[in-house]
Image (cartoon, rainbow, N blue to C red; front, side, top):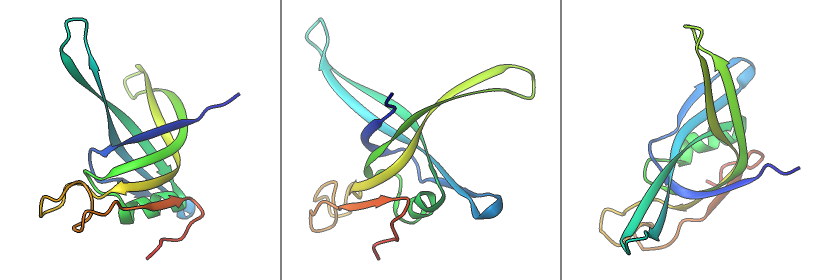
Length: 136
């Protein structure tokens, strides 16, 4: 059986990182992916899907240092379906992407308007997984 997901999208917000017992860390953020298609009437339609992403431990610490709202990121991970009962006794569920590695593709729009890359127009290429130290 395989549970593997690949997403390329933009961060909707900076990661929210929490530090737990035993030096554990978890980062959560939303990632927007877009799909453009032509509907039955011939109109161009852009559809945005929002994904809830979580990263753990070393990967979460790296995400806290390099991920920012608006950056384009490639994520490899797996789908996690969670169910729980809330404090009022209602059954709840959520679908999350548990990221296993990520790569920054661009830093978002530059201040000088060159494009969605660094100030010189270069595509950023930072590939990080849970075992990698930060590259700087």
